[in-house]
Length: 461
Image 1 (spheres, rainbow, N blue to C red):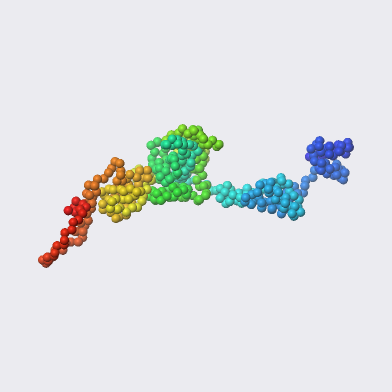
Image 2 (spheres, one colour):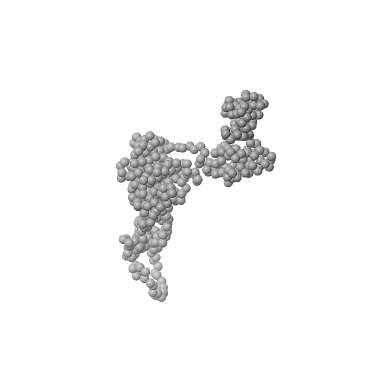
């Protein structure tokens, strides 16, 4: 307010003798302010009513020790409520004989604190790192140099096989350079190494859809520390395919930002349009899709996503992956890939009655030479009716569960294998230990008493 405006109000009191209290009610200006203007006018004239900048403008007039006290309370975990903080500051000011700061002054001091400082003090270093720490975002130099794989629980309910509602999961494999989705799998239940293997199988092998060109073995797979990603199965598969697995630092998801953004995209653009979508506040949606229908919808969306221009790249993920044309590194065959990804290796000792595994016994005639030896088996967790047997990475045979519904070994098969193995061992003994012919006449030896024996095999006659 200028000095002239102040005088026009004050002259009603000076010349017209209107009380200051009445002026305060009519103009809304505080009585103490009007009294101060009147005193300035009487002491120095009208020019004294002109506003003058304060020497401490822009600075807080609260005592330094009170400011430090307020900041200390504001950075203490748990931080007290602002009203509680103001009461504590008022008590502290009265105890030291200082002017009590107003509520707005205390609030202004608290709000002026550096947000990074507040985050570090109240939420800890992890929250500070995720919100305020400088991040270096690297993009792979070429396709298939680095893939990212991760799971998310989808914001949708579906009908399960038993008719009950279920909330599915999605595993995605994305190429870091092109942002192309190379493979995926939709499933129910907790994430597992097998679900990860199914997504990787689709990502690595050639697709039947010619527009979905992404395939090949990556140099690096970037994953988190989930138990399915740290399994011995995945580790051994990576060694066989010459893939380097990099686990992100625990509690630091920045390295998986690209795949997290795709999860948000599929949730907002696809799931929001499907029945059963879990919207905020809607806890009882009516699911109508089953797992197969949801899988089909997600597959169609991924095809569209790979073909449309990407905002950051300026081209579609598919075109960025294809580039000028190149040949990805591929496994020798789909059978080899399935043997690595969809089977789990275990070491077992071949017993006399077969291989004991998962409470079952597996038999095959070819196992006869390996009784007592340690072999490696591979099995498909989805179907353990048979196992594949290896000796030093050399395939031996397929051993079948004795209770297999279609393939069942007969006792004759087992006996034939046993006799063949014994004949083989006898021939080896005869070759290594020649029979010595003695010229001396054999001495008569009393025959031992005959004992009846239980005949176990046909050749024991």
